[in-house]
Image (cartoon, rainbow, N blue to C red; front, top):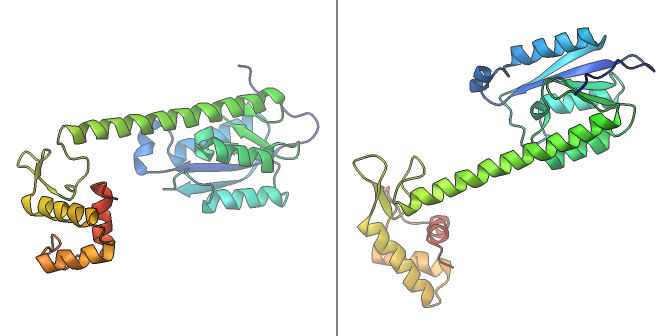
Length: 239
């Protein structure tokens, strides 16, 4: 893929935007310092005036409601720059819907440009806009695939009687090996009581009262609340 050409109609003034979700990302070459170095080098190479570099540190890309990003977009709206420069597209967003909103609201006209160093994206060209949309779709597909695989792995662990979190689900305790789940007699009896009461048509509030009458308590020994019983019913798939 060829590198973007320098603009011929007007000079480019850009706002740099950099983001990391966690400190661990520094190990993968996307630390704040690494991103800023890439933006600076890119701006120098293509004669872009970098008017500001805005940072979102420890912030997820799941939403566009980020302090740094909103500040950068505000500067673009006020005409303080005519381009947004990022080191990689996923620093801006990982969601196709959010990407589409940004393109529609900011980067679909000739007034504001999106530039991405690693992806060679320059929305001043039709090819750049096409690449932007394709990469956005691939990024979301990858994220959804990982989510599906994680869900399948957790389901397999549950089928094997292994825990899937730091805490045992209600009705079970963690065995001495630290990973296997074993049934808890008292909690299993409570679940059975809820299931029986529900089959008799009792409301959730009536079930809470009935459990208290039978002497059931939380793991801490306190009376069961309606919300706690609702969570147990949800986990046990009692409707």
